[in-house]
Image (cartoon, rainbow, N blue to C red):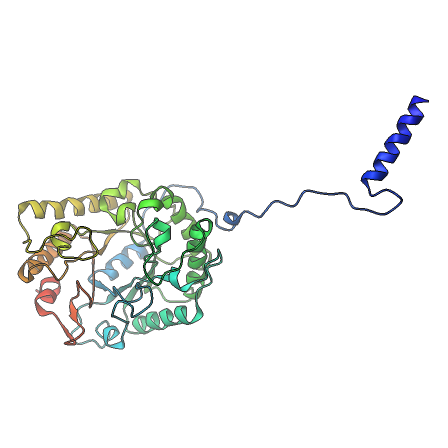
Length: 375
């Protein structure tokens, strides 16, 4: 009797759970787990960095003596800082230039401000076409070109500038990788004269994540550009003093890049983006200043030798508020010290506050050019 009552009760309970009354119902199930967005972005395979390929060493040398197209594509929008990439500037480089001072250009680019705000970060078609046109014009002149990602302020935890749009915190790093996927695929068929640089001056919030994020980004690039030369720099604004923190992925087609603006009180005197603004009238180059120049370059050169990779100084320069004769002495000193260590370099920058070229007079600044390129 108990068994019969228990069975009947259980049957009724099951009917009730299924909708009862003979109606066909569905059993409630838990929703499927959300897909992990990071699964699409694995890191590079584990392993020890093998040392540089001959192609990587050749690319570092080809970039040497180059000039940054600063304050152009790295502005919030091209032209917002008073400069655009003009054909006049392109024609200063490579085949057909007269005189020829440089055969290499670095293009700092603020991709993040030209992409959708979601994790897909779809890059504006007109903007990537604009970049591609510039790259192709330079490559056609035999110029070695470095394309990077520049001023993605949320990636570093920096305040946004006027004209920038904030994105959700959870998609910031995913956007970085999604943008690199698009950039790499767009330029997959470009010749070996094109070099990628993963990111300009990682710092602040990005520092603890940089090694992993760089590895993911390189894996993204390698999917469409298996042999493209890629530059990777350390944290603390690409400081040579932070090279010991950089973990290189197991890839031979890499170049180490650092930025070297020491002595900073000289190179950035009067710069209004430095708070507080550094006093002007600072001379160069006494023994203490020369020691600071040499210290950073020694760190970079020695690190490259230890790892077996070429080291490239991707930025150095002196702001126009420095005394003119001192700027010349600084450039001469930097050129001499980098040559002594066989470290190729690229000057910051062409035609703005550090510029070697006067865009109003449409002429090179001869004293600065002589210091960098003269006999």
